[in-house]
Length: 306
Image 1 (cartoon, rainbow, N blue to C red):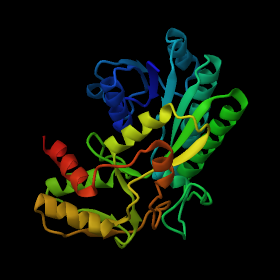
Image 2 (tube, rainbow, N blue to C red):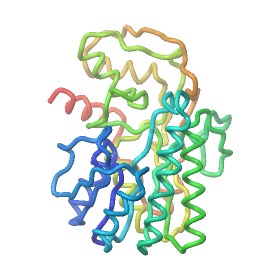
Image 3 (cartoon, rainbow, N blue to C red):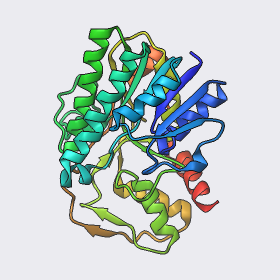
Image 4 (tube, rainbow, N blue to C red):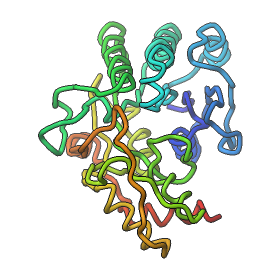
């Protein structure tokens, strides 16, 4: 597999995936509307500034690059609060946009497809860690739209012999993440602490998350793209549960800042406890995260200070 199309490739996760593909001497083509992507993330790659909801313009890319070997679909509306305020907007990107990418993948005979989903599809679960066969009970339109995207990917895989994989990401963090999204709690805390502000914890701080370093996620994406387990779903996670209170304590210690959080009302769509079982992807692909939370925090802080 030599030429890979990455939707959302100029963004946070996508840029790390593209860097890894370039390191592996692949030819990378990026489709990104640059709403959150950055031009400085694009090096030695061809960038098409296109929105995945614009099927006609998106097809120009597929027509020009009719020798694409695989598609990594990362472009998405990824903010749960935005999905609550504007569910049609969320669905248009995450469902209709995904259908556009799938249709063109089918039309141009591309046989490898990887879809980035989210732990948000699970909602609040009583049994932890969460395995891939847990019931799907999303708490926000974002979780619903990502799960709908999964269903379309599985349907296309069955109907058109598409070698497709679905990866459900835990809470991804690391360099290049924007503090403008609520999913980037680590980046938000770093920015607040470096600016001498009091970090804001929504809720009591006992809520838990599974934080996975972005470069570990990139390895999982690239590893799974060529896998043979068609239409399989995998959790991509650290497999460790961390409370928001413990997270902030660690970050304050690393930055030598006092622990003085503010507390705000819990937000609609927020999940109480979440961490994912990653044993399935470890078994099938021999992938496992190699970056501890403490090391990942250090690296993220180092980049923020650069």
